[in-house]
Image 1 (cartoon, rainbow, N blue to C red):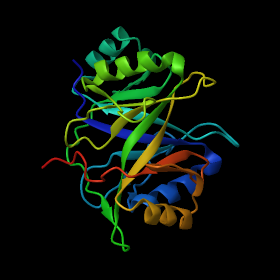
Image 2 (cartoon, rainbow, N blue to C red):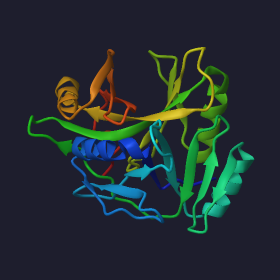
Image 3 (cartoon, rainbow, N blue to C red):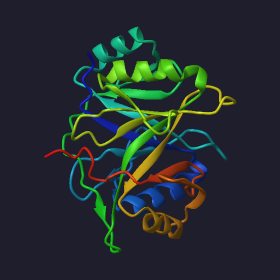
Image 4 (cartoon, rainbow, N blue to C red):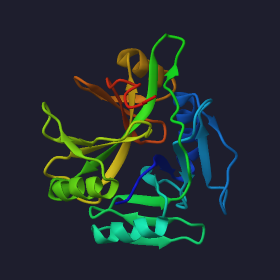
Length: 254
């Protein structure tokens, strides 16, 4: 079994929106931006004041306008063994790097990487001057109906985390993450017109959604839709994301 010890979410931002997206997500989280690194200085990390990082930003290689995206890094003890097991579950290897990571695609086409980087201290939610808390705590995989069951089985078997169905919303399932893992995986079945590949977006948990959403709007986000348990927004880079009513301290452990 692949033992996932940490999950990092990476925002993939085209050059024309990279600066605006980086500035926005740094302000939304109150995390500092690391110095750039990589062969083309394309990677930065959002650094929480306390705890280990779990959000990174990659400037993609496309020139001119492009679409922002998101992928996951799964932290494991053995990249080689985990990649071989993922292939056996239906993933396809896209790249094997000399730097010690492997890029793969899920059966539905969602990009993820296996990396060997030991991180253990999950940051606590940020408490804002308005006396509410929020934290990025979830990646929602947006899955076309034809791929939904396959993706649910794949991600559960890959991580070893059980799948749980939503009682009130049959289009949602989630994986039960161990305490201390910073990112939970939500699996959303899209409408019938949706087609592969599978994509993903970030979700924030907040104990005061209206106040949190208003804060995001002041930082440049635009509200797209309001639902009973979450609000969908678009960030200045053009990416959709959600603010939810989930408990921002859920799964922190002790």
